Length: 322
Image (cartoon, rainbow, N blue to C red):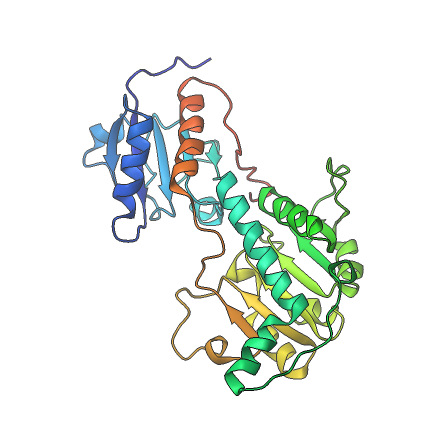
């Protein structure tokens, strides 16, 4: 077993909004008072040689190269596809993704809001208000609405269970086979099961990880498998969606509405069709923002485990891509 370190050196690096790095540094340093910190990048080869753990937020390519003591890369993001694509990160180096209970709860809230809005037609009432129309429409029960949640990781299961608790007819889908859900959530898995699930689902919520197998998953074929007039909620990654195919499905009426939080290019460019499309409700990648307090606790627990030579939680399986 690796000897525990009493005065570790930690690298904190990433691409930050204004003040974001300093907020993270403050929160992490409060929880790891014994650590020495290197911010953004090592200044010298000697400094690089002292770094034990890197805590990262979408870091620049190759910033993790040449760190011989590195024991762990702890991501502050749930998505790790860019880290996995960086060939400067040693293949055997443990990478842990962020699994934040507060973020899971926030994502479930957004999924519930989106499904409620689509089920009850609140987006249509908003349009009617803008047009000055008094236009009530029939109201269905939640248990009459079939919802598919794609992705059965921490976020997906939390969202699916919240929707089920609200009364919706929910089925979860995962890309790989899995055991029966411990909470009795209806689940299916594998490529062969996806088509039949889409065919019976009026609302699809995507919370899949982005992998080579799921990139571009929501395409013309996927949308054609849905019942006519169904809705899609994409809360995962913009690259899951083929935007031109979505617009074509909306134009034909095959798709009734889309709720989109993530996009191929962010921020969404001015003049993009989604800004003014009546069939699209968009969010500015705000479905579930990281809660710095709980996420810092998660990151520090993994850092302490790695420094003590113990297993870390939520270690990325490179073969699966998450």
